[in-house]
Image (cartoon, rainbow, N blue to C red):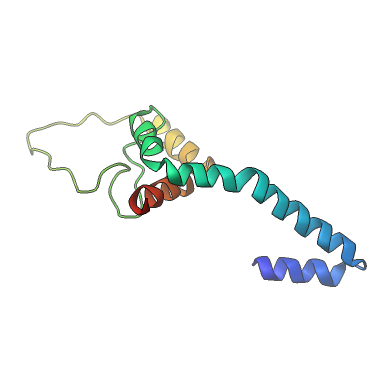
Length: 118
């Protein structure tokens, strides 16, 4: 996708300077703003995951790639007699939507990978 986008820009642009300026702007922004944050997140991933798991932002219905709720490594065992109180649908959907709009699966994945590899 990125290759096709770059190719289309190069074909449509009459001046190579435009292509190089766009490339420089994107690369510079990544190096100056995004990468330091990602490195910090990877280095201190456990603290970030602890804060996310204890925040009201966390929704128990949102699951990570391993199929379990965020912060859970194994499924929970629930008594058959226990009753669970479910959140209203609007609140649950709002939290799940906010979770994905803010790219939290990406940030949580970086923090998780950093905490396991460091």
